[in-house]
Length: 249
Picture 1: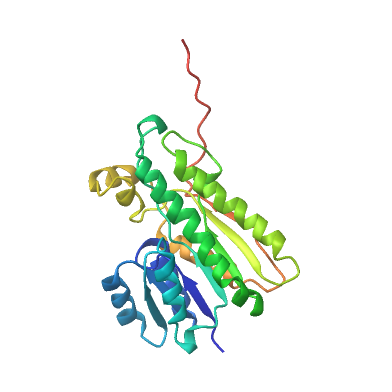
Picture 2: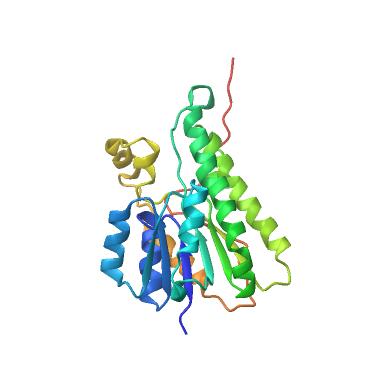
């Protein structure tokens, strides 16, 4: 009997790669995203019997609820929630950052994530399922310009640990995946479409790929049910840690 994964942000990057990986292993996938054309292409690629497209913006609570209510019976038994939808916007230091960008990051990375998680918790408890939240090394290690993005990812990691505590005894597993540098549309979105900035960041850096992270998500989801990885931090070998800043004068 196949299991069902509910993957947010499945139109690109980690979410798209994860949808492909799970379907290849025989899972059914509910794939969410704002771009209907990309979800349609995913269904064409993987098969309508394997993927159910749920087109909505995770920040829209009413649209989210409507999409959940419209799940076909064969996709309604959610065994795994992958909270992948998220974004960074802007690289400016806090005094020069856009407040609108900050609010979009909070609404997407925090509010939408907790809303969907709360909505699906009863089903996940019933099925002794699992939750995998995609966080970031930015939630652990600060850097200039990380401001609200790093703060939202710190929330995701701490929320996951608290979920784990609250779900004690239910059999539900909770894990955060905390990636470092990975080449996806991430930087293109962060810079509001600056392809040159994205290319420059990843040039000769040998970053991770979306498929690398999807493989880790799949690994965690398929662990024996008595094992829980609390957090999995992963970086490319070329990325490590910088020193503290010191201002003089």
